[in-house]
Amino acid sequence: MAKESKEDTRQSGKEIFRLFQLDALFQEEKYYSIDDLTQRLEVSAATLNRDLRRLKDNYNAPLEYNRTYGGYHYTSRLYKFPAVFVTEEEMPAYGIVMKLFEIFQNTPLYSPLLNICENFEYPVKSEMIDVNQINFKNSHLQEKQWFETRIVMAKRVPDTVDEEVWKTILCALKDNYPLQFDYESVNNNQESENRTIEPWQLIFDREQWYLTGMASKWDKPDEKTERTFVVPRMKNLRLIKKHFSLPAEAEWMHEKYTLGFFGVQTNGEKELCKFIFQGSALYYAQADFAPDKQIQKYTGPIPHKDDAILVTFTSNQWPGIFRDFFSYGGDIIPLAPEKLVQKWKAKVQDMVKYL
Image (cartoon, rainbow, N blue to C red; front, side, top):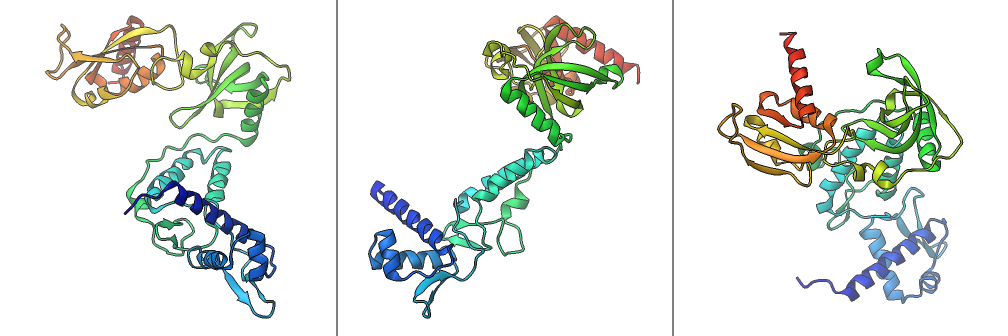
C-alpha cells in the first residue's frame, strides 16, 4: 500500500476540521439545509454530503434529515464528536496509563488525571468509531478488552494525602512561601514536632510523596538543614506569607544534586561505592545504578560464589542504596564506602539478636 502523502495528510486534517464544525452546528439544536451548510463550510454539495455520511456512518452521529424543517439535525443531545482518537494498536498503552493513575487514588491528583482522560474519550457508547479506532471504556460490550486482563500492574497504594494539605503545599511551592507544620517523626516515638520548611520540590518515590527543602532542626529551631519529609505525616500546615529565595539549582533540584538512581533521599558527599553481587542478585546488577557504573568479575579475598561480580559506581544516596540492596542478604556484600559497610554490619548484628 502506498504511503500517505503530505497532501493527503493535509486534506485529512481539513476533513476532520469540517466534521468538528458540523458537530458544533448540530449541537445548537437547529436545522441546517444543504445550502446553509455549504455556505458556512465553503465547500461543494458533493463534499458536504460525503462529510455528512462520514459523520453518521463512521462516527455514529445521531444525524437525520427532517423534511418538515428542511434540514439536518441531531436527534440526541448526548452526542459529541470525539476530541481525540485512540487507535487499536494504541489501546494497550492507553490502558496501562489508566492503571498507572490508580497509584494516585488517595491523593488530590487522582480526579484531575481522570478528568484529563475523560476529555480525550469518546462520550457515546460505541464499539467501533472507525476501521481501526475504538473506544474501549465506553463500549456497550460487557466483556473486557484483552489487554485489561492480560496486562496488569501490581498495586501498592500510597498513604492518603489530605486535599487541603496538598493545596497548601502547592501554593507554597508556587509562591516560594515557607510552611509551618506539625510532623509525626518515627524517630521521636511519633510525637508531633513543630517544624518550618522552605519547600523545594514535591517528589513521588515508591508509592510515597515527599517534600524536600531547607528546614529548621527539631532540636535547634534557629538552625536550618536540608530535609526530606513524608507528606502524609505533615499535619496542620500553615503558610508563612513571606517569600524566600531558592538556592542555585545544583543545590535543590533533585535531578541535579543526586548522583545515582535510588529514589528521593540523599546523605553525605558523593563517594565511590563497591559491592559484591552474586547468586540471586546477579540479574539486579544489570540495573542502571549510576552513570559511571562498572562491572567486573570479583577475584578478591572475601568468600564468594563462583559467579560473583564486583559492581562499582559513585553516589550520594546511601538510604536508597541500603534499602534496595540489603534485602538480598548475603548475595550483596558491601565493600565501600566504609560508613555504609559499618551501617550494614550494625543492622545485621541487630537482627541476629532476634534469632
